Amino acid sequence: MSSMDVKFIPIKSFIDSNFFIRLSELKLDELKLDSKPIKIHGFLNDALKLNKFNNVPIMNLNYDSFKPETGDSESSGFNNIMEGTLYNFNTIEEFKNLDKQKILGEWGEEIKDGFDKGKFNQFRMITFCDLKKYKFYYWVAYPTVYSKWEVTSVEDVEYEGDLTQQFQLDEKVYIDTCLEENQLSYQVINFLNHIATTKDELTKKEVSMKIYKNGQFKSYTFRSDVKTNFIGWERTNQGKLGPKLANLGTLIDPHQLANQAVDLNLKLMKWRIAPNLNLDVINHQKVLLLGAGTLGSYVSRCLMGWGVKNITFVDNGRISYSNPVRQSLYSFKDCFSDNGQGEIKAVRASESLKEIFPGVNSQGIEMEIPMIGHPMTNEAKVKEDYEKLDELFDAHDVIFLLMDSRESRWLPTLMGISKNKLVINAALGFDSYLVLRHGTKELDLGCYYCNDVVAPNDSLKDRTLDQMCTVTRPGGALMASSLAVELLVSVLQHTKGKNVDIDTSTLGEIPHQIRGFLNNFQQMKLSTPKYQYCSACSTKVVEKYEQDSWEFIKSCLNDTKYLEDVCGLTEVQKEAERVSEQLMESLELDDDDWMD
Image: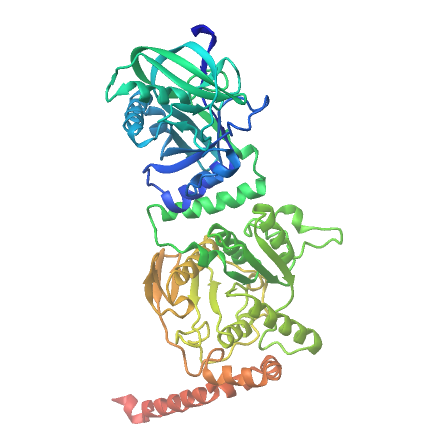
């Protein structure tokens, strides 16, 4: 066989999509902006099990390439693990501008230095991950100390030795990963150079070695032209030198891509801005939104932005023509249905969330929240609503009060303190808004009613049109909604969670309540303690509720005076009247005093 009959065939890489999935996980959760080299390994095709469909050297990279190396000598006949190093760049510019020839030379020197340690063949890989589009740019190199070797003779030989290693330096034996008779894999070149080289100079022009392929051993004699340089960058399928692109965005299910994109935006916060941010505690929250109107729409969207995936709406209204412009979960077509009415708000809101993000677990429940000061006309229906609300409180971690009447917030406030839930209240005025978190059994912060000296009553009766509709400046709802969600997230970042007092967390301050005023564009942070005579969260009211349950609620719904007697507001009112009378008496003047 003449020297012209044998060609050296470079290794080809085959990279599974799960390799890039694992790389993206590492980039997001561990590496972040760290661009340090990563030790990985590839899996060479088995030289003892080659066939006509698998007859050239191929290195496979997959999810397991990032795990600690484990040789598989029993199944392969030799250790088919190929050591490698991955360099992941933070920007596409860094990836493109890398001096490829210079870095290949540096890697080649590393390979040469490893000869004495028995490390003849390794690979290097440079990557850039575009995680927004799920595109991965990469280029694999097999650094080779190259000199032009020619085959001068080939002879059949017998060999009874061990076949558990691909390279056997002492006996000059090599097991080839290329099946073709007139071809050898590039891997043999480093092996040849090590045999022929003393330190930096190629001192031996002719080398003989035994090579196993096609089920037999042959003795090859190689001759070199002595000149050496470094080669090894893998070529594209078109035979050109250049990087490759793996576009996983076209392969991954769109629903999975949506999930990964949501996680991406959140995990990027941990890279530089908020490394201690606990995203899991946010993600696992089950949130109940009482109200699916303007506030409910914006709160739900903001919750999803933070990665909350379990959201339940409760509302008894239907979508009207005035809703879509202010309530972002609805559109014009939702204002009418086959029965001539608008769609059910809670149900449609839940459907809209799933259309926006299929990964959300959302449901909508049409029901009326029993309201204090509204005497019952159908006790069975009201009790059914009460029991359903009770079940919903048990099934959720956080409750947002987003209704459009004051009295509808009373029962959820009482249930929240009794069940020790985190309750966040958002309320709107024409040009003002209030956002506050209620206290818990362990936290003596005031609730929505702690500043009142009367129990809530029917505020819906005898209202004019401007009172029946929520007349507010449109921007107030967005501001209140976003602040309510941000307050929740700040609370969750504290180690005490819902029981944290006025404090700070990873994201900054954790106030009790926020009051905003659009007329002068000001905002205040306030704090009030729990009021001992509060009609919703005082100890007497909570104990009475836990003792009598529905019977207590029924009495309160029918007569707010009963609630005032229980919590002590009746005596507070009487005492206020007595003090007022005493003050007026002290201010009375005789007729003669007017003449002075």
